[in-house]
Image (cartoon, rainbow, N blue to C red; front, side, top):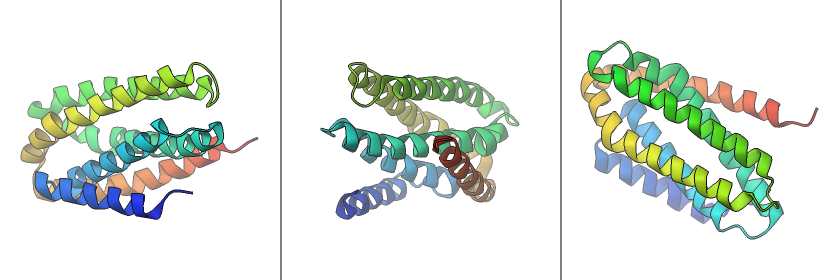
Length: 176
């Protein structure tokens, strides 16, 4: 069971980081989700039993996939409309495919297998790089190009899509 204090601290840190960055709308939400994912990944890396790893990994997997799929469906297609963000969309698409491949590799590794640690380390490194690139490079440019109104509209579309993706991923994960 996730520690409620850890969850609250993670969300508070995410809110502080978002406010500090001055990001609102969809970019503020994405930054908040990055912080929450980072906290989950830290807990996963320090988990000590296969059962704990499986439980935490199921949550990490679901959140990462829903986040990326929501971005791919609702946020980054808008970037293609503008010259200043078109290349960002292409780079993000490539990174998202790599993250999904790393997740599939971790799926195959199994929480108690010898391939688990290197596969998890690879995923964490990829996610950290991806988050850094988005927050440091992509989001500031996109926010200046898209503006507050479109960023807010994208937030609503992104959140709806992410909820749909979470439901689809949950269905995929159920035993048949």
